[in-house]
Amino acid sequence: MSKLITAMTEIKNQNQEDISSMRLFIKTKFPVIIQALQIIDNDIGRRKRRHGLNLVPRESKKHGVIWYARFSYKGKMLPTKFNTYLSDEAQAEIFAKENKNRLIEQYLARKDGRMYKMIEGFYDDKTDNPDVLRLSDRNRKEYKAVIINKFIPFLKSENILSFDQIKIKTLTDFQDKLLSGEVKLLKENNRENLVKKAIKPQSVNNDMKSVRKLFAYLARKETLAENIAERVKGLPILQQDRKARGCYELERLNGIFNKRWKNEISLLLCMLIYTTGMRNSEIKRIRLDDIKSFDGCRFINVKKSKTDSGVRLVPLHNVLYRKLKAWAIKNNKKSALFDFVNALHFKKANNDLAKMLKVSDDELEADNITFYSGRHFWKTLMSAEGLGEDIEEIFMGHKVVSNVAKLYNHRDKFGKERLAKKAKQVFKILDRCIYNRQAFPQPKRGHKSLPKCCVKAVTESQKAG
Image (cartoon, rainbow, N blue to C red):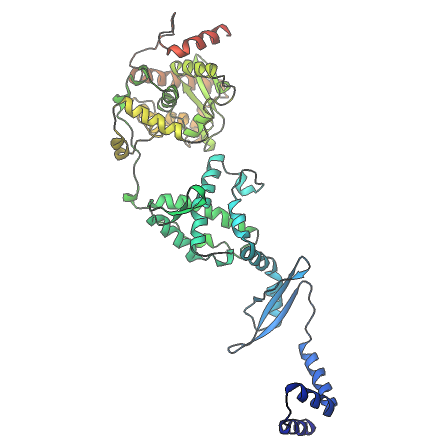
């Protein structure tokens, strides 16, 4: 030690011209001391060799030292260090090993936009993701639209580049933006426009379903350390936030389907929902093969629906059956009769019915009458005519108690008889309250009860048996 102090004193007293001369002086004058210092430095600097990762210490005023992790990816060391926030080397190593995949994924997401690529494709129709495959095609498209048109533009407006930047506050801010209508929506040419269109709390909660399902998947795949979406509460829905769906007065539709309509599709769609009470999604899947007959009554066999209770038999009036069959023959419909890709036909049908009834657009908006209101109309009509609440639930596909379901089980002979008996009551109600007659006769020569465009088609179908 005394030799080292003497050497340092002698070095300080030297007045060399430059640093290189000083280094040469120290190396030639004190070789033993230089060698000893190198041994000490190598011993301190030697770190444990770890497969795929390395730990690097950094000085910290508060903790003394903080360990940072470096990872290798595809055989190359990434040019960034990840803070473990730990001062203990052993604990830092455990943290680095457990979070290696997540940290690397976040780094790559920031570098090449991988996060947005993953989010954009989450609800694709060609996915093998079981979380998405369980969704109906309609829900999948709706969820994807929320992610593409609302959530991604919001994240970009917040300058978020990786999943680790998304916090609970980020998701609550997204809720607030939706509620206030200040969220940026993607429009044509992929340009973001600020569209101020406030939506109700229940609509915000519905939009958040797509985000929650996305985060649940990311947490399950350990892309995220936790599912923070679980800790985001839905917005409370007050009574004033609810807008009851309206429907027409019962007597207003009497005889409306006996008149001549300009648009045949609108006529058929309105007849379907107002005389069967079926859901929109069920109407889109109707095929002629789904129409069954027993005990003198026709039924639409709903094989797939929103709920398990929705799988049922729906009474089909002869008037509507003949029109559907003529429509199918005329348009050569081999599969679904109304294979629409969007809801525009339903909206048009609702507007066309309003025009037939001389109802203005303002009245439709004020009373909240939509195409789906036909389902409410059917239930109200059957209740008013005393059909019986339990039978309404069976015909409409709502949840029913097990003993009622067994009573009207269409696979059972007595169940079919009970269904047919109630179906005939439905037809009588429709004859009296919708078709404005006690009994609708079978079409006679000339088929005057059908539109002219359907006469030829019906004749051909009857010849074909």
